[in-house]
Length: 252
Image (cartoon, rainbow, N blue to C red):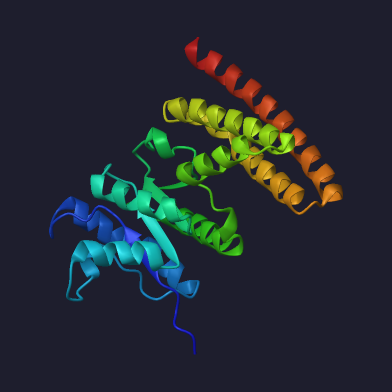
């Protein structure tokens, strides 16, 4: 019988008895653990659960690198959390971000889909559990398509350096899409209506799909893929118009 998959949780921990520890324990117990165990993972572990002899930092990094899944709680803008998160991003393995509903997502990682949760609200927790499950299943189904700011920057560099004009064009489109994401992210938490601009994420996925079809020289599928990109760009234009109207209404 195969060993169960492992899940490591990167989170602000705090000292026992503090609000930070209390919240972190609740997120782990009531949100993360039920979902990952349902999906075939062993009991999820945080850094404070590691009790093997040796350097704790080395053991944490080993779990971050080797575990099949990492769930990251961005709440509190903890420096250790972001250091550990960058390691996971760099190796491009499955991860899920979550954050307290009251906090903005830091700008540098704002394009990455993040689950918002109010741990004191049972409805919010249930919604977050559903979204966590969806994201884990999606990551497991296509681990080679996991994207984050580090992987996207490296992929774009490779595309720009390619001698293939199609690859260069994809790089340009992807870069422009990323810039639009950053514009949205910079004001999204002031105007939640900007969530209507989620087609940005879909355009990025469509571009990646197009790239894969071109790599495989599957030109019939590539023709369909480029039409899909065009449709999503058109949808984005409509979303931008809606958000522009909404913002004008807020300013009046």
